[in-house]
Length: 510
Ligand code: F6P
Image (cartoon, rainbow, N blue to C red; front, side):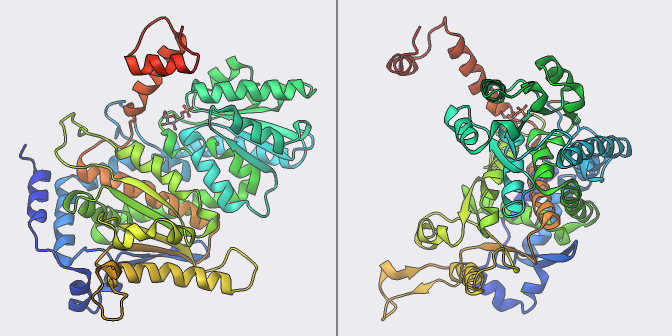
C-alpha cells in the first residue's frame, strides 16, 4: 500500500550504504556526531552509536521516515495519556508513574506511591515484626523488572533479602522456601490482572507454606500488587496491604508502579524514588528532543536499519557488568512482547521483519561462549555493549580494568576485522569485520542510572514501533497458548495426535 511511511522507507532503502571503515575515514567528527551524553543524577551516561552504519544520508532518511510515521504526534499522545494501544483502547502511562505525563495520572500515581512508601517504611521500622525475607511472586512484567532491579541494586546492602519467584514449576518456589525463614518472611503477590494461573497457584502454595510452618495469620503476611485491588481483597488480602496501580500501565512497563514494591523493600523508598527520577530524566529527553539527537529514536533508526535493510533476525545485548546480568531477560520481554507483531496498528499485514530476537549475556563470560559466531559466523548480529566506568567491586582494580578493556576490544575487533595468521591468508583465521555495535557507558550504576537505562529501552521500543506503524502495547500472541493450556488442564476434549501422545506418556490423558 502506498503511504507516506512506505514512501519514506522506499526512499531511504535505496540510499548508498558504506562500510564502517569508509564512514569513519570520511568524517573526523563521526564519534562526536553519533555519541550523545545525558546528565543523570550525579553522573552521566554516554551513548556511542558511531560503530553502526548510520550515515548522514541515512539519518536524514530515517528522520523523514519518523516524520512520515507521525512520530511527534504519537509521542505527544503517549505523554498526554491518550490512546496509543488501539486494540485495547488504552493509554500507556508508565511515564506518568515517574512524574512525566497527564497531570491527573501523575497525581494519582504519586498518591499511590506515597501509600506504598508508608507501607515500605513501616516494614523497615518493624511494624510487621521482624522481616528478613520477601518472596515476590509474579510472572512476566510482574517479575522481570523487580528481579533485574533488585539484582542490580541490592546485592550488598539489601535491607530485606528478596526472592523473585515466577515459574509455575514448584522447584522455583521450593528454592525460595529453602532460603527463607517462614517466621520472618513476607509474601508479595504481584499480578496486574490477579488472575494469572502461575502466580495464583504459587501464591496459594506460599500461603500454605506459611500456615504449615505455624505462622499465625498467614494472610496478614501477604501484600498484593495489582491493577484490580478488588480481586486481591476477594482472594483474602486485607485492603491496607493491597497496593494498586492504574490499568493504563502495561505489565512489561510496570516496574515503576507498586510492582516495584520489592525493589523499595530491598533498597528503600527514597532510593526507589531515585530510580523513578532517573527514568524521568530519560522521559524528558525523549519527549523534548527531536530527530537524531534523540538517543532512543537514534537507536531505533539503527535497529530498523539492521532488521529491515540488512535482514538481521536478532540483536544482542552484552552487559560488561555482573549486576546487569538480568537485563537481557528483561529486554527480551520488553522488546519481543511489544514489537513481535505481524500486523500494523491498523490491522494490515506487514511485509517486513518487525522485532528482532533479543538475546545476550554478560561480558566477559559471553566472549568465551558465543562471540565466535559474532566475529566469524554467517549471521550479522548488531550488538549493544553496556558497561560502567566505576567498578561494582572492591577487589584489585585489575578486575574492572580488564573487564572494560575487553568490552571496548570486542567492539573494535568486530568493526576492524583482520586475519590472525602469519601470512594473513588463512581463511579459518579471517575476520570479515565491518560488524556493528553500540556502546552505552554509565559513570556508575545506581538507582538513577538504572532507571534511565531502562526508560531508554522503553522509549527505543516505542520509537521502533512508531517507525513500523505497529502497536507495541498489546500482547495477544501469548493468549492462544494460555487458552490451550486451560483446555488441556480442564480435560474432556481431544487434541492433535502428537499432543495426545505426549499427554498419555506423561500420564495426563483423561
Ligand atoms: O502472558 C503475558 C502477560 O500478560 C505479560 O504481558 C504480563 O507481564 C504477564 O503475563 C503477567 O500478567 P499479570 O501481571 O496480570 O499476572
